[in-house]
Length: 447
Image 1 (spheres, one colour):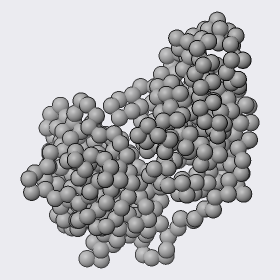
Image 2 (image 1 turned 120 degrees about the vertical axis):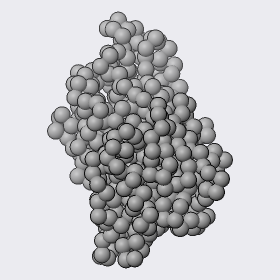
Image 3 (image 1 turned 90 degrees about the horizontal axis):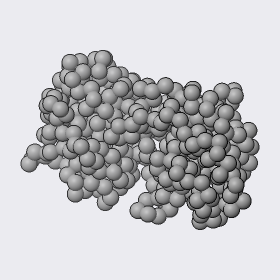
Image 4 (image 1 turned 90 degrees about the vertical axis):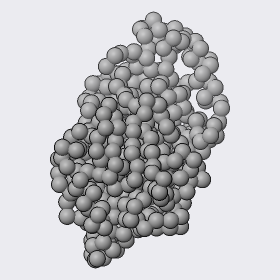
């Protein structure tokens, strides 16, 4: 039995202030000297950067669709080792799952982890009506324990008084009354919030939450979570000679699942992080280009000569795996407000768009290719992008999607040339995917 105090910060809907409240609670708990382990429900890359900056511990994604129940529990338990409390930020509204169902919803993860829920409600423009909303959330699924409610965007003392008058209608336990203040609003762009390095770490938000929420109640709620019985599989090397794998990591490339990096290391990779904006390609046997915002730094990338260095590595036979933003850099050019020459490894051109082109979970199967992903591999992932890739007629695609749009928009992903593969899918690596990438780099190392 494993004791892990934990609380789920859920919302009634996207935009209710859930992320702000989660950040504030994490900061307030840490200011009290607690070791806080952060988590994020769903495939999001951006919110975890804020969690990590605040807590000083890597935030982990918890997604039943991509991970499965067993691996989700395993990740939660392993990541929580040494922490005093775990704070999990939910996704969308509490009950919003895939295709209008429950799967991969905040409630689903709450059930898997037996985690009590703290519900964030945006009360702007409401008083007594908020109790109907809270009552509905509480009664909708009795298996979900809503242990406390934080009322967000409270306009004034009178506004709070008006809400408190009808408190008995919902049976809610109020643990916070957060004022409607400008400094609590978080700036965003097309893929979501600004990244943590672009914004303050949330000290001011933590101070506001300390003064407007009952942090002792949050600690009590988390402490009331029952023990978990999950057995944890240890991730470690197998004693083989380590293969060095380069991982692009900077302002332009920053979307990585921590679990993916750990599985690559477990499969035999020694990870070497480098910045395409300022560093030469290190002495490695393979390259992993994650997603991010390469379109914002295209000019800097060209000036750093990264695209031409990447092309040279590919021509030399080095395996290269690029996801979403990484895919764009592997193309011949990237059009933003102007056209930027890219690596020219893949026979395609990329362009930014004003509207989202894909936002969904992905089910993928590799059916061809000579690159880092071996045929017959299957995996799950996620796609979310404001760009399009126009492929040449003779382009070859390695990955068939039973769910998701991919590069072509009709379920084909994984554009490849020789040992380079670019995909719109942000894959959640299983052991076989990680092993395939490492084996490709090992073959190059010994060639």
